[in-house]
Length: 108
Image 1 (spheres, rainbow, N blue to C red):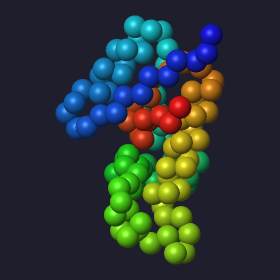
Image 2 (image 1 turned 60 degrees about the horizontal axis):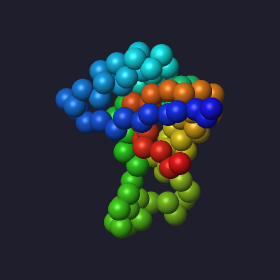
Image 3 (image 1 turned 135 degrees about the vertical axis):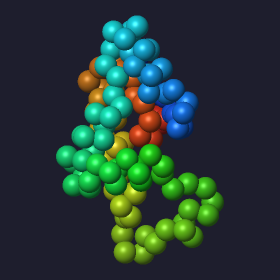
């Protein structure tokens, strides 16, 4: 049986954190939310407050190339997204889980 990964995108006041924890409890699988911030902090070197503030949104849309300066390489958001993607993918490969926020909408 392959791993089942449930991702919950949320906004302030939506209850996504609570829903994620309850779903994980019912299914008997881990839920990753604030733990992701710690993992990202360890791998990126960015401060936890910065990750909380800037780490949920990836630049997107047709204006994105015009609103960021990538002439000198990847931006901090690019680096953070890459690290988040790696961490979330690694967790998903290890076993079934619930991922709350942190760019959790998957590409699989």
